[in-house]
Length: 227
View 1: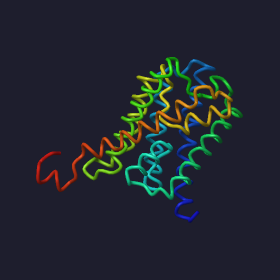
View 2: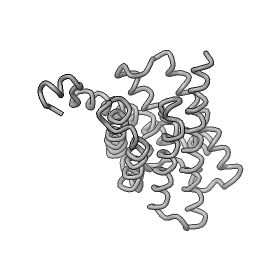
View 3: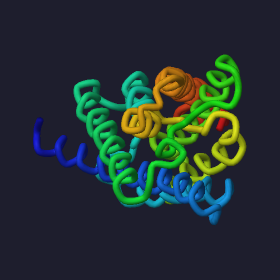
View 4: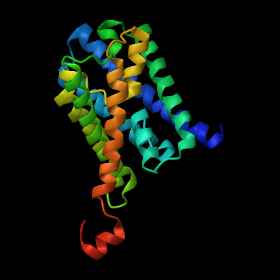
């Protein structure tokens, strides 16, 4: 692994660790104390994503999510040769953060593992659609020069929070295989894990390709006035 790639993978690890430790930790704290509520937990997830996008976006692109990394690579916006390093950093950080929650905060709520309260097909659909919109937003602010890069952290963090607010009670609103994999493996809560490995990846790829399909290029916009 080259030093530049190691640096970017390190940034991904820091961001993913923060996401899982703060977000899943908030779920455990809410279970223990009842002090945060559903809205509070959702705001923690959105805030930590936004803050870490702001802090590391210029280093690694701030994926923090294997589904996002695979979607960028599938659309030609990210080199496939760097995918294993990114996903390895994300998954490793999620496992480490989950172990940290177990050691420092508690084991309640299966360490914040995502568990559906609906049947399998609705759970797959909800995770697919929510991740679709998350990736649609990420693709817009990360790859389109006409979108304001200054609000990327707010847009991405806000999307995470909104999806969690709306869909969290049904599926946990993972949108992220690493975020689900870490708590599931450390807690042993594996029964529904496959849902959160499959649906977010498919949703993210669909979201990325859909944005590419509907967003005309700068030259086309000037000539045809389509954007």
